[in-house]
Image (cartoon, rainbow, N blue to C red; front, top):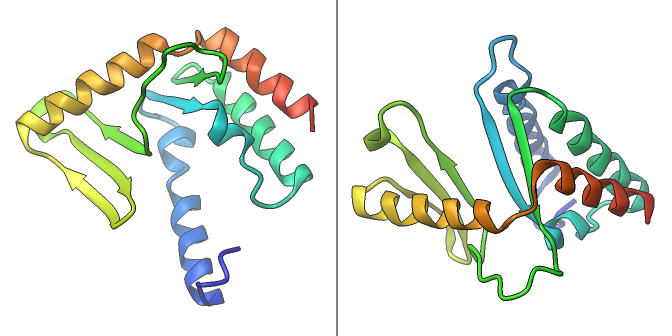
Amino acid sequence: MNPEFPPSEVELRVAHRMRRTVVIEDPDPMPYETVMHEAALRISVAGRSAMRAQLRRILEMSEAEHVTVRAVPFALDDFAGAGCTMVYLGGAVSRLDTVVRDAPHGTAFVDSEAQLEHFRKLFNRVRAESLSPERSRDLIYQLSEDL
């Protein structure tokens, strides 16, 4: 828990994140693809048992037909990726796509065509450099076993 947030703020943030699971768990879910760096998979926030549970939950969700999980391992040479969190929300009409980017100054929403094209290319490059879904699951499994 972040000591800067009062309990009421933590509760709101957790509730918001729990509502987001509808994207993956809805009876008629949207395709969902994520690429995670090994560093993000190794960050311990709430201890070993919580971290192990989180990794196993990722593995469980990665088995869903509409979910693709990819990882970028530390061992990947010459990888220069996104540098910080990026969420690319895309659909049938690409002009309506949006990028949500975390930055030191806060969250930024990007929706101009030129910027979207930049982030679309960046995501495609990161995806191309990442491990296959099968090898990504192997890495995540190994990380959970190492705890």
